[in-house]
Length: 152
Image: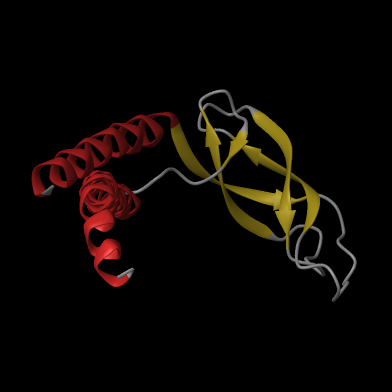
């Protein structure tokens, strides 16, 4: 069980770290300006708004992202964009990769324990059924001798 849990956890961690490296290479953070007024609405936590930013090569891009209600036009915010200039989420980080590894390792250990106890219960059930069947056969042989003693 420890080997399976450790192996699964390390595999998940290494896979997540490859994702961390790939996302860090293809995404970067830019400062964008909100280009639309957002009404102050307390019922909604975030609303979509149009934003504009300038890439490092001077290309001006626009997109839509969620902002807090009441954000004024011209406010600046940081957003993550990919190589194509499309707004994306923040890249995965090493802490998340560690968390994935621990979670997968822990779930593997938990599943291994569950499989062990399920196999143990199934084996016990099979052996009990066999033992009860043997007792029934033996009782069929002995029971007539016992009941005959009480009929006299």
